[in-house]
Image 1 (cartoon, one colour):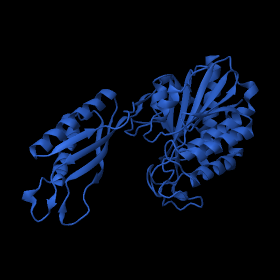
Image 2 (tube, rainbow, N blue to C red; image 1 turned 45 degrees about the horizontal axis):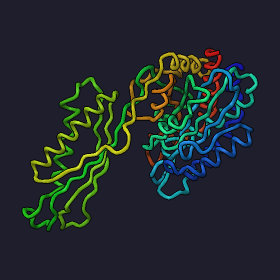
Image 3 (cartoon, rainbow, N blue to C red; image 1 turned 180 degrees about the vertical axis):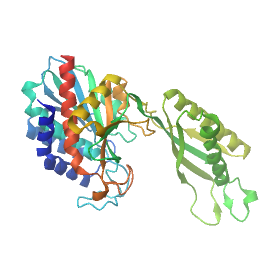
Image 4 (spheres, rainbow, N blue to C red; image 1 turned 120 degrees about the horizontal axis):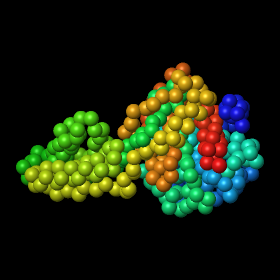
Length: 395
């Protein structure tokens, strides 16, 4: 099972992988709603004669290839889309109103199915088992955590795990990642400010929550600029404000949403503490009331195992050339692949899909997000080569 031969075989099924991706892309589904995506995955696994469990973690799929009484490694892809209206000029544009695969999870799912097809071909030669995790709800639903809770890493116990994220800011055919902390710990932020509404011509008779919100937002920015060490990464981003509709009415309340990011859970908890303290004191000074919440679970940082990243680099250099493999600085995006890495050693890397010639130049979560599909065969081959090399090392 020569690695170059694996890449060549992946090139030969490139169109098949792209076709699957386009079908998934056309009908995106939000977290824990991936019913049709689940169906497509299961139908494809049936065609490949690969055994699987479905559902797991509500709408996920867990497949197995290889021997049950040997070392076990896992490969993972996420499946959910985002609540974004697509503007990309592709022939397979989203037909689900207000929903779009703007983070490449359709690509991840298709590449893992491509890897499944190749691994099934080599099944008799595998020195162990490869689990394939098709995970729901990466976009804020902690689907990775639920997959772990429902036993995706058990029976047999997974000893290593590998995952890929498509990366439009890197050129097609390149990979990047790092040992240690690669992606940030994340938290959602929701603030409700309560004042007293009234006529906009008589503001003295009101307690204006919009003025309160303006002060709160400005003060929150000082946490990073004046409280964090300049060499310690952190993010406080306000992303949504909802209040009032009329031009002559001061509303009684306002809702603010945002996200917090840090490279450790300790720093994330510090951000949460200071957001709460600052908001409460600003609102108190302005005669209002507030509720500060951090909905859902805090996502831990994505921390790559050194050996697993070194193995991925070695495979990448063999397949793509040394110039196509780079070390990345930490990135403040978050990924719930982190939940798996809390349980077992593994590696999560970014696969370049950027190519201006095909319009793949917009970042993730952008309504014009596109990818260079020529990268799909590389992604499938990386999955296969990493799984086989890991099983051999663990045997």
